[in-house]
Amino acid sequence: MAFENEGATVRWNALLRNYSDSPQTRSWQVVFADGSRSQPQPVTLEKNSMTSISSAFPSGSKSLRVVLTPDDFSLDDELPLVLPRPKSLKYYLQVSEKYGNIARKFGRFRNLEEVSDPVQADLSLVSYDPLLPALPGGNSIVMVDETTQSLKYLRGGIVAEKHPLMDGINWQSLLVRESIQIQLNKTDEILLWQGNRPLIALRTSVLPEAPESAKPQRVRQLIFNFDLTLSNAEQLESTALLLHRFSQGLRDRKVALEVLNTETGQPLRIATHSSAQATPLSLTRFGADGRTLEDGTEMIALTQARFLQAPAQPGFFEIRQGDELLLESGCYFADTREADLRGCQSDDQIAGLSGKAVERNTREDHLWRLWVIIVLVSLLLAWHFTKDRPKDEEEHPADPLPVTSSR
Image (cartoon, rainbow, N blue to C red; front, side, top):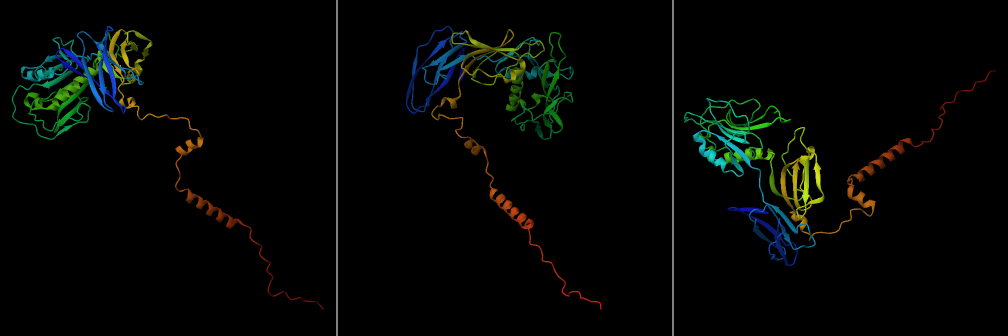
């Protein structure tokens, strides 16, 4: 399953595969949210082959179903789809003029929206002014703004710490000039070093509890402890990848509506309110007519939110926390291993004889012959030293005592 943007139109692409050993002919059509249907389209697949089908979401349509001619395996006869809409991350710019090019490149990341009010922003892109050394209070990316031009490059080996933000990123081609530094805290995580100087750090702090919230807010700040415009960082893919990972991490933690397509049984990661007054989650499944299925609503405690999974049956579903909608999804069957029924066979899980189970789960001792010999030898030795022996004959003295008589 894939989606392509063609101007203002979104096109979906799906893959069909024939697992049988003979050619198969099927037809497919699109069922729209209002119940109308497209014209059936025939498709013929040779044995053990595959092809793709594609169409566009109509203007204003947010969901549809692709229906295939039914067969004996019904789970993959229908493909529920929703128009994907990832969570948008709002960002605020507060950078000097020389950082304008970096700011424009950052704004090209997907699902970012620039705002003019820092209060509404989820993330701020800030240049650090040594005359105003205070850092922003919310989530931010901070970059040093050096006012003097230095021709001297930093010396020393470049070492990246082990951290999810730095995993697999190569910084060995980074060239950094001397510049002022930001005062780092002892609790800051250093992500990148050059010699003894920290170049990139991650600061995580907790804001005091707000009156309307029962839980403190965690703030993350990515600090570039050097002037990016006095280095080649702007030309490195490593910088773009680090900025993308950091902003994506903030997006994952943002509590907002997300619309995406999922597979049956897929683990779900949803950001939720977790204060003491927060309500539990509710997962609701819908039928083909858009109505809630009977027994289709399941209540989920917040303690179980990290174990959330998409339903086992294809269809549309949503997840709410109280009145707030967190997720809309079309759930489809996509396990190609289970769709291939050529290797299926019956299996009796109950063994006919218990001896077979014992034999299957018992490991033979290859030294059993040695143990038998040792036992036999031990028995023979014990018998030899404990058997009854004949009594010794009484010994008489060789010279009998003389017999004397009195006269």
